[in-house]
Length: 245
Image 1 (cartoon, rainbow, N blue to C red):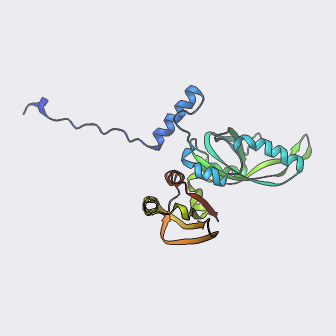
Image 2 (tube, rainbow, N blue to C red):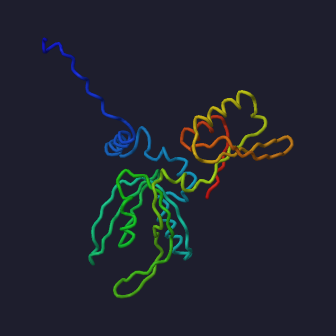
């Protein structure tokens, strides 16, 4: 009956995961001005490499080039939102701003009226986003006169983590006959089984001696395109090709 002998329930440690990693990276950036242990976009390396058309640091240069040539250009960029705010214009129209950063630098996007209403749900700090836009001519009123200039108009924003599901039609691995062996086959099958998903899988088998290139569509396996899967392919020196919708 002694009170001091009763066991105490231990405290459950706080859950760790993606939020903790982002918080750690945020502190690294604040303290030393750069990410040290990793970059928030490392998880999305496949999406960044295969679906963006330029880096944030190059966006202003591309807009300037389009202004010179008067060329309408489609541009896709992606990155992490580092700041977001909303307010009103002098005329009372709702508006918002967000700064998106990738490996190269950052760019500020401004939204007004309907665009503000449409894209506001995505404007959250530490959110990875994929932005589709068009550099095109737009009219402005300046000093009572109408002037035209090339600007980057955002057409669509989506979560960067949903790009594969939205735009990947299929995934193909490239193998040559000299690579084939029982050990290679076993390792390849195990890797595919570890990365099961919803993306259709195709294999291109190339025979350098006879010049044959044969395509095999897998009816048994579908894969998930993850950083781990891409890394394992590179370790096995297997090339790949993405089919886009």
